[in-house]
Image (cartoon, rainbow, N blue to C red):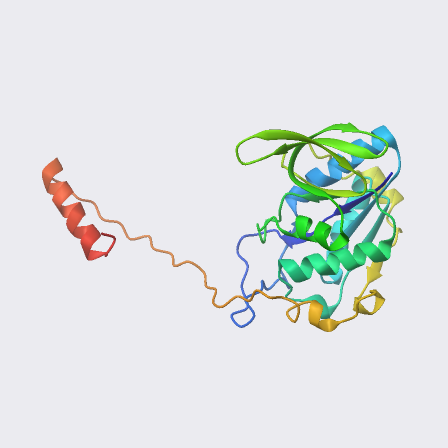
Length: 262
């Protein structure tokens, strides 16, 4: 079975500056890590490979330093990895990102199962996985709670719906986004780090894709644009009031009217 896991390098801190013009995160010079939700997707892939055999590839999109998360995936057991990196990809919204990764997947060749984390911690949209599947023309299921059975031509999963938990049998090739805690992720292995220290990370740019139309990638291909973004104001002012219940209630009402909350 050929399994592909989508991973991403995200900021390792919540204190990240935002470009006031483009509205995108300034990622240069900040500590980064693998998106925590992707660890669950990786572990799911390892469990399926242990049962059915096959290979595990990983794919990521980002600047050259994002190759670090692919090397981390090697240390956990991934067989091969590819990074999509090109300045023309910068500033992509979820739609442009989904299209870019789908083009990279097409370039990588045959795949039976694509696994994604539920969402990323720097975007929290949970849209990229399903949108990729639509571009690839394959069935997909989000919010997968557990893998019930892996068959020769399909996979049975339990999914978390708004009001119910349902079980679905999905034919390969397909894409799944998995929930947190589907399995306990393993730690990177020092032994595998030594074994894979010389393993290359494949690199793909726009020139390598079938569709080379620059208007479909990065800021050019993003139909959603950030109009205004700003950090929240920090307000630590405190007031302490004393009095009877009736007095405090009257004062609270006056204060809420003063702040125009009522």
